[in-house]
Length: 169
Image 1 (spheres, rainbow, N blue to C red):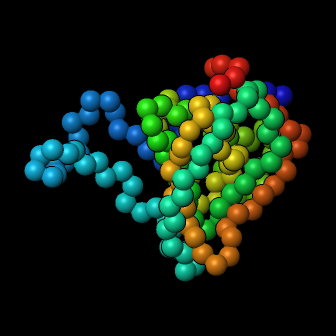
Image 2: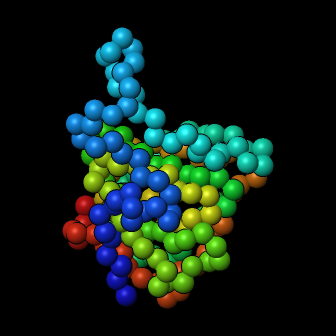
Image 3: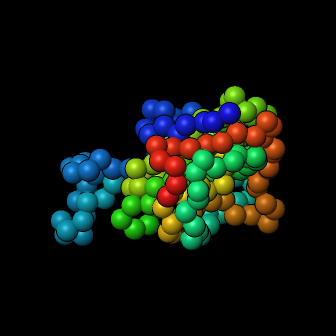
């Protein structure tokens, strides 16, 4: 069974979280720093402080994956959100997701591919595959830190393959 990643859109990704992007050439936001910078407030609550949690900022240096890629397990962070923002010109990645709740069945999985400038914030409890970079590089990751790890893992059975519009990076 093969799952084809669809282009990431705010509407399509809404059941799983938030797309982090500003439209090219957007004149929204507000001017700051003496008019030299346009500020876009994208997410007002990243849901990171539940149960004595605190925001943590990490850098993931990802290798490009080869596609199709076997999906054999999923994970979720039940208490806090997790955010991935690519650094650099373009860093595409595929995100495989399923709705919050019980461990997902294979037929409940969906996949999206970013345009290389989009980031995502996974809502608490959203099942997802580990980072699947199409383009090698750095990603800023913001997530909830606490004295106990907030990560549940489940097996995907039967396993499936995920691909996007190309066969490899």
